[in-house]
Length: 183
Image (cartoon, rainbow, N blue to C red; front, side, top):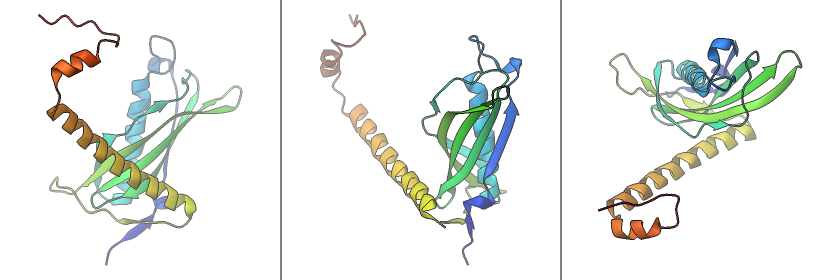
């Protein structure tokens, strides 16, 4: 019989103090530090749900909504929003808390697609997802629609690339911020 789990069984929170060694050249937290933390929390969440080691297959747009300051407490909230046969979509919300002022700011969000891997390093089946409320249904449906849209956009780009007329593209680029110097 197929196994099903609710996302509450795998919801994961990762919190860490942003220290000076995480600073970029502008004195704020380096975006790469945040991306690494997002990958870690996605792994933990997906692995808890799948019961197998999970790897990152893709990352949708990561929105950097506001900068994160050194000295802030960064918390990442991860939840399984969608499952396929061997893959899971983990939604991640990142918030930053200024510990002196107590203010909390939503700083980042993204969706990570993770694939469960078995002991033979092959994709493994994942448990289904129990949808208990309207929010669960909304998140599952949105993730499913994003997957369909992404597949469509990929195909459109492949078609564009395969059928590109470079002379027409050169004409199309005349008003763009580029200088064409083809001999």
